[in-house]
Length: 252
Ligand SMILES: *C/C=C(C)/C=C/C=C(C)/C=C/C1=C(C)CCCC1(C)C
Image (cartoon, rainbow, N blue to C red; front, side):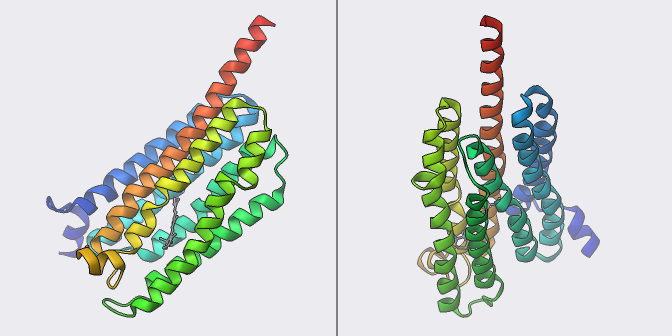
């Protein structure tokens, strides 16, 4: 029976469905970013490799999370946070690489990574140690602590160092691209706390009766938007800049 559970996607289970499509989409995106590296100027190749790594790391975790979910019917919390602990810092690396030409220092990268770690460690404590129907105050407190890390990244991307460096870059493509990534952090990343609040005792759980199965639904949708979307924005910057460079070389 256990084996059967692993092999069969129940027809009425949208969450299982998003685990499978999530896995396939992440894998396809990785292959795409990896091969497209060959079409961009050398200075963009590292950025595209990081895009490919983000979706590839997610694909491997989705492979396991999907089976874990089908076998147990539970949220694969530990696998989820291991994935994020690797992929969110890599998204910070993308911001750093894009603003490096405008003078970004490595300290900027470390500050963003430290904020990510705060956000994720607090989120994990709030989620992993929140027993069914249990200690709400505990998970609300850790959710708030986590949000401090999130707001720091949000602030840096919109008004802080990242935004200032992008503005100083004198490169319209980078400026627009960084602004689009900042939108992802504002609108796309905000989907995660919505999932978090579906936990037993969470605000959406108590107010609207949204059950804990929705935690994974929101996380899966958010991951697809943010990891693949982020990668596509970086890809768009790289390919546009490469083509502009080529056109310039022709007219010169
Ligand atoms: C690829 C994975 C990404 C971009 C994950 C992002 C995760 C977050 C922005 C999580 C944020 C959380 C809060 C702001 C408060 C509640 C706990 C979290 C960890 C769900």
